[in-house]
Length: 329
Image 1: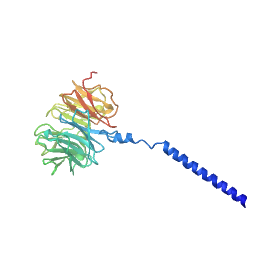
Image 2 (image 1 turned 30 degrees about the vertical axis):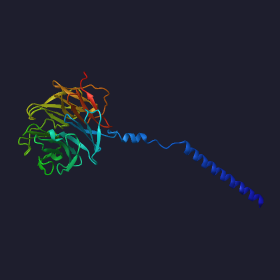
Image 3 (image 1 turned 60 degrees about the vertical axis):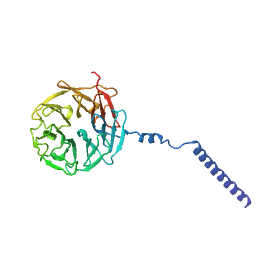
Image 4 (image 1 turned 180 degrees about the vertical axis):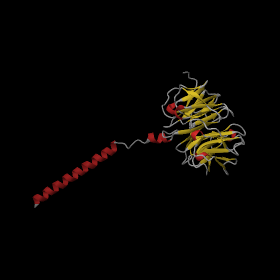
């Protein structure tokens, strides 16, 4: 019995020593090793431009540049794109943005809201939007009135900052993707399947015009005057009008890229689009503008930096930068 008891005691002692050894090893590992380093994540979160940002609308009033993202953030720069400030609006996706003269910025939200800000790109406020059910384009008239266009060929206007809206239904199964006021009274809207609509009474009424040939789908449009304008389409198509959209002629696009946004820069039409392409109109052709470190992704927005010989471009993956337009082919 004593012999068995002795063996049992020795076994217990070995188990205790093993346990102590294991605990010591664990303690040693805990003392020598460090937890995961989260400083990089914290630092990234403090950056104004995040890697997951998708810039899809950009506007500039010459004083500040404002960028709307797909993730609910508004990015504002008051030093020509050198630095940015971040403002979270919540569950939003700003699909289009414009400048309303000296009254500030206006943006339309995929989630059926219209957002407005002061001329410094601050103090963002939203109002609900009933129609169109999915808004795609926004603009202002010369009196500061708000105009939104979207699916099912619906155009809505408000003259009181979004408190009340008047809706025009063009009765077409088509998306209106672009709307612009050309002067005090005249406006034009362009949409799917070559749809054109015009107003000559400040938006009080809208009527369909001649269709753009070929069931044209307008990605972007830009009018420099009541008569002259340009429109971009699928597979890099570019059309030009000199009679306010009644007729259109083809233009060469040697950049061979679909242009998602068109805008004026130093008095010349520019565009940004697929494959990281920046293009400008030279004569009757759209030609790629070379720039340093191009990224072959779609560019969702672009805006002029007046007097800087540069523009701001934005796209996915936190791509947001100012690039020079002085480079030669």
